[in-house]
Image (cartoon, rainbow, N blue to C red):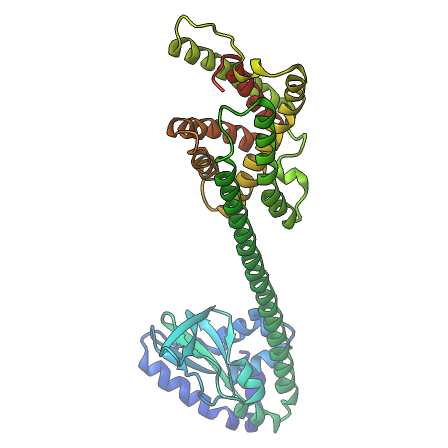
Length: 409
């Protein structure tokens, strides 16, 4: 028996006599017998805190510890209670609770399973317990006090006390390192959250500025303006809108590829955009034919009134105009909303962006706003699939020209 290793010294037997009496009392109280010395020795052999101990040291611990049993929700150690003991969870589990004096509540800090330890801080510095320990379920706890260790010191067991203190110190340092790492992660998460809130405020400011520009420019645009002024107001409106949106995009310090200015998946995007453009062009032709039966199909709308120079400028500038519109709508606004609503479904940023642009065109008419909303859904879906502005700009360009060609602009 391992107990014989330490029981051969009569003086040591005197020092551990009270422990044996304690075992007998506990055994008489509970139906299931307490673990024997061999079981405790096996426990300390597997316990991480005593991995580097010699067999004689583990045998000493097995003889010195007291076994205490606790029922569910029973308090083992109270916060503020004086204690210089080290506790090992033999079976079951315990909860570490912290008292909130301001709200008279206790909060769960952690859960310690079988094989874990607690009370190590008080064991080292003899200060009162910093938390309450409560049984999470029926459990058995091994307790070793400084008094018992010091009693063994008198009989040549100094190495056990020092070795245990050293192991506890290492365990405390490791726990502090882990807590420090989690604290850093928490601070980083809070910093990221604060930064996201700042970005959202900038995004909101850019959106408000867009609506302010729209409310100002819409009063200046009317169908009776000469073509040159129409183009001037259209480009002025776009550039004024681009200013706050562009500032917001610049303030995020992200690569331009995040806003769709990328050749990523451009071949597939172009293929899908050509199909979508063909279907939309057919739809525009059908709408024109059904809404104005007997009228010429191709009238080119306001473009037919342009001079040669104005037409030339239109054909040169219309493509970049469409690209800038999609950069604002899809690249910046929809892309930013995708960052702000990361926990939602992919359709949500598309719906929000489409709703925004539908409201943005209410000044033309309710019907035009609804049409803008529906078309924006298609554009948003195409952009979300490939994250490049190439395909969606081609569809925008084709749909715009089709509308102009049949005189629906």
